[in-house]
Image (cartoon, rainbow, N blue to C red):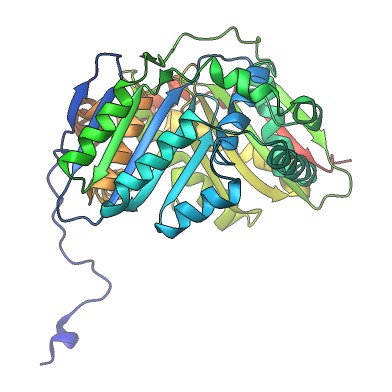
Length: 431
């Protein structure tokens, strides 16, 4: 008999759960100025990646927005190179040099072939030591940002997200701020040199080097990092927050056939003992394509293409968010269905088959993210930003593996408080 005829396609083949992973630790050192240099080196890789993480020194949105634009302007020319010449020099090496900003951190990222790491490091040193902040490039960036902001204001997804952050956080904080034309227009190019002078001698809190790098290249990087007089310090002190009032709030968008829904509440951070159980509970509730919210709101009702529940890991005060774009006529009905699914998770034990499926999915996602040194380095950056370490990551994997249905029930009861959440919608308000 042919082997195919002997197989029962309705029965899954036997599976063996992999053992819990042991993460590779970095070669870590702390320089005299406090900067942490962590290396994930591998001689069989051809790419070298460097990431520099600068924690936010301020929480005020007006300051953080200026710092964000300053970091983006670092790539727009130096005393010796115009923006085009700088871009051409990086392109010639087949490399990338990126500057990014979020409410908690400013980041610099380099990716290049390992033989070009020294030239890229020289370019970075030039960019940091003699940035030009040209008026012309700032005007272009300014106009682009204002135009993008005008486009965003036409989207219900942007309006709902903005309203939620404003309700949870003060707009005076970068957590609660959304770009607006008035602030962007008020920033002048001549502000950047003075602002940069005040931060130039303060280095990143963390430098992560991944891939292949020669000893001389690592020494050169160490020497440059040691030239800073001090480093940025990460703060997890909770800012003054408004008293968030629960209820339903609208950002009206007349004539829109689609509404956007955002439900949010403050939640625990990654250092909390229940963090791993919360991640597992959110995964069941709305964290992947087979989640309960997805099955209800998308598969059964057909009201949305996708709905997700996730934790937004702000360093000073994270929050839990449920988000979807939804048929305008069903927006308030969807809120009730979300509440219903939360109540079920809080009152009924999760079935063993569903729980095992989600555990295996989460383990698979985790294992696929650490198959090479770049993924491990990215994971290290994430846990460092969240204030934990690889010991905690491995412990979290054990907690998830051993979690039972009663753990999910308790976690949902304690942290999934939809009834008292802030509910924000944008779109056509139902009659």
